[in-house]
Length: 278
Length: 347
Ligand SMILES: Cc1cc2nc3c(=O)[nH]c(=O)nc-3n(C[C@H](O)[C@H](O)[C@H](O)COP(=O)(O)OP(=O)(O)OC[C@H]3O[C@@H](n4cnc5c(N)ncnc54)[C@H](O)[C@@H]3O)c2cc1C
Ligand code: SF4
Ligand code: SF4
Ligand code: FES
Image (cartoon, rainbow over all chains, first blue to last red):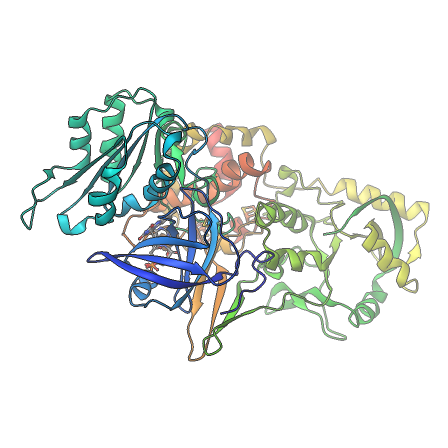
């Protein structure tokens, strides 16, 4: 499909081709997309509006950080119209992308610090862009710890990276857990917040990033608080229904913040200043 | 949307000549005039010698639809050629004839939203292409309260040309270069105004602020700055008991701009369009997971009021209400923003 006037018209998607599809779990696939024309620049934490033409658009976090290339990865759970149709598409098929949109993880502010990632289910997708970024600039950061859990072993995403790549990078720890052990699972069992408490990470010079199901985020934030992580060093992402992605359609606000423009990344401190309506 | 000119000029336009003027402008412009049909006045596209009604108090539908249409194609999709076909955004130049001061103010409020960060070309193209010829109010209806919101019903300097009703004729004020040019190009319709007419018009303009039956004091809107307190106010629960969630208040609101985007699929050609949506609907914020941050009428009616009176103010600096009165006039259960503000402050 042609690339039109997307610079002047923010509603026109750019066309990208599906280069590679990875089946992560029964209902999650990762799509590597390549723009047919033009560059793509983004920072960890941002999202795109993904178009499946004729079906609609859906906001999806960029789950990769691939510098110098005009490609990106989206890890998508099959939910409704757009995401289900996307799951039926093949390598070589075309989709549309608008963005990148939203704010970013505070990549400059966290330089020189330890990073603690706490993810659940598909919530590891937005964190993965920052994980990629921090490994790419490995010397900019101290110790990197990743705590990740899913319901069962079959629900774990990015298994290759979790088990074989990330844990082999220097000064990096990966802890994987499941709520329910099936298929001869030998690893940790227990919900993410429980494992977090057991690991008892020190808040010194450390920034924590958490993303996952609302209930996991809630208890992880409580656990981080018990571990004395300051509110400004506790970072999470918010999800609200979106359409335009650019602060026009009026849908994704929490108080006076538009999650598509001012979010989706917030520190716990900022979160506490928002009305409880998310 | 035009550049302001500090030097305003006064002219006179005879009412008996308005139709001729419109017929002349019709050659160059697409004109929208207030037309009465089945007891309702709305802005309609002017055709040669059309009847129109300049004695209206205000239109049922706000003119926002001329900039953010109720439904608008964003682009079409040609599947065979794998192409997106952009809508032609070039429209002929347009005039809105007879826009009221509250409604022209609503456009400057909407501009804030549609210009923030990414410019909304669909809205702005229409805005830049449209000359506003405003009409002063001297007879507020019982629902009007624009004067509570820093709108001057008698005098509107945000429009290109402003008309003040002097009985047989209008005093014509040119506020912008574009407005002055239009008058200059059509000297047969506009004569220079004399001192006496100008004085009379200024008097009429300054009296327009009187005679309002509803409204509130400016300081009564300050309470909305404290989101923490106002968010938990019991009034939202009370309003939720009567509100039907029909969304009329938002559709007819001059400043409500929320929309949905969706795709329509046909055989070889599809399209993406946007259409008005409302924060009063459950589906507005309901996510596919089933989680809805505003699941009940209480949260939704609170959103409507706080968006206008609090969130918009801290984001863009002004209240997103112009006192046009459409919401109170048309709400089936008489929910009234002026009384809500009053009750929060004085009960
Ligand atoms: C900032 C952000 C990042 C996200 N990142 C991911 C991701 O990386 N992977 C992933 O699988 N999902 C992600 N989601 C959730 C994803 O957007 C929804 O699952 C998706 O929109 C459902 O669309 P659908 O067309 O399949 O469902 P339908 O039920 O057909 O949805 C209709 C439309 O409603 C809107 N909508 C519905 N649910 C949501 C929702 N939860 N959030 C936002 N808009 C919604 C979308 O515009 C969608 O197209 C993200 C959401 C947000 C806000
Ligand atoms: S018009 Fe009245 S009843 Fe309908 S949604 Fe608005 S406030 Fe509720
Ligand atoms: S809230 Fe009511 S009075 Fe205010 S601009 Fe909207 S419709 Fe008019
Ligand atoms: S998605 Fe439209 S305002 Fe945020």
